[in-house]
View 1 (tube, rainbow, N blue to C red):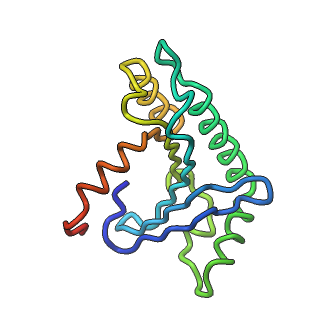
View 2 (view 1 turned 180 degrees about the vertical axis):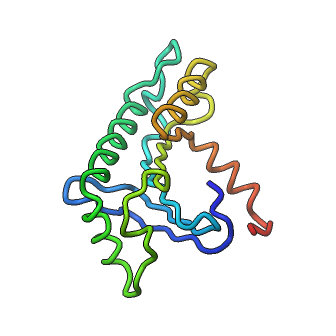
Length: 154
């Protein structure tokens, strides 16, 4: 996600009511204002995909978790707002208080690069297009971290 260079914030274990918790919530501020990225980390090893390339239990678990979050956030955005207020003493910008699905993004991180084949990559692209859930593997994170080290990020 390209947040521009205005500001970026990380919330670890961001609670969504009493039933759910995102491993991380990333909030970035750019010319388009604040964007929210809820992140679920799953196992880097294990049942990532099955032999034919379909998603395995690990990926499906992450997707199901995010679908639960989506339903909760759509129906209970005031509870999300209350959680934001716990983390700051300043008045937050309007987009923190008003639900806008176009500002909310979701990521599942599961498996390693070698776990994915052509079919699972196609399923991953479809998932992102159809449900606004981005599926990454841990090697994606390593690649981005390595390319960022020593470089200006804005």
